[in-house]
Image (cartoon, rainbow, N blue to C red; front, top):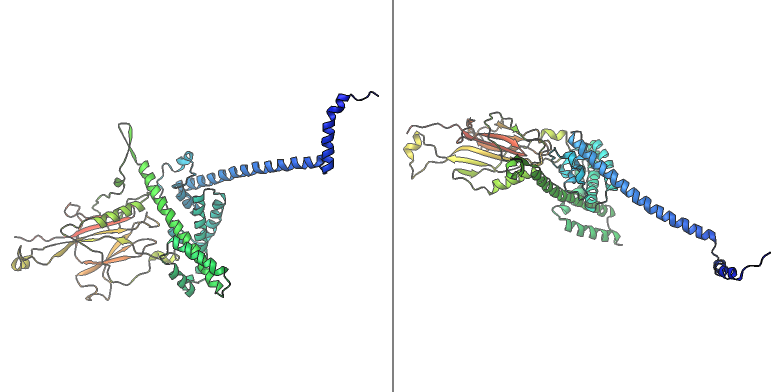
Length: 457
């Protein structure tokens, strides 16, 4: 056998010394194999997590896209309205998906009102859908929106179940006390209260644990309600701005943006029916109602006008919709009304009065502007009715020559009534008569004057 080359022996010495070192420290080839396998597993887990994240993102985008399609095709579920709400302020919104609602004017739904209209079965299904969106969502702000919806939906399910079993959770005296504590508190105040409750629960002092835990849960729920209100303000503002961008006309082949105020100016129509005209479709009208309310509030009175905002003292009626929507608390609509007055120069007044000694003013007409921005079904217009309740004739509340005008609307509004002069209306559309009966973008307008008798001079 040939002897090993000295040079070969020297070259292998370092390798043999490395083997000796491994043996000395107890490290084997199997250990290296396990390390390599572990590194590969970690890398594979990282890639898997990245892939799952991308898959979740894809699933979330598809879910939002399907929601928009169902809204567009008028077959939306509760979750769809809430998902479409979010698209107005969604930082993760994909511009490529805009065509789903490009030709549809979407009215954002107020979650605080909308959830109260749902039945128990709808709330149960919605809660499961909300959980899925919450799990898939990664954007912090969006996640806060879904978290708040989950909390409120859970509370509404509890209320709905109790109502179905013939119980009213509001009858609980502890709940009443807690509601008083939370009434009018801001988010900052609630956070401070939540912190103090936690300290109380963590302390060793003897306390009523059930009460403090109930208060803690109520604080968390109140924060959720306020978060939804905050988000809805942002959503409404964004929806209004988007609506402005969509309103374009073609002039000489160029696209020109329309001014926003043109969206809510109402035309005068000589309709005599007491069923108000409906001219709104699926347009966003909450901001229009708010603008006109502010406009009416700041509008200076004409020389022949006076404010007329005193409601009639009549028994309160339970709204017709209440039996179908027991979880909603009826609310009074806001309004800005005016009464038009002037002088009547009949035979008696001509004899007893003159230009320097004027007769008492008489009512010539009324201008009612009543605001229903949160109306759940704005395709059904409010109605008005003239009535004189039995048993109240010849009383101080309602005089013989007076009557009641009652305005009624759908959920969540209750009736509002005013006492007016009982005379024949002039339904003509002449400018000086100005009869107007309309409902558009959440604003009811009823303007009328009474028929006048022309006295000979």
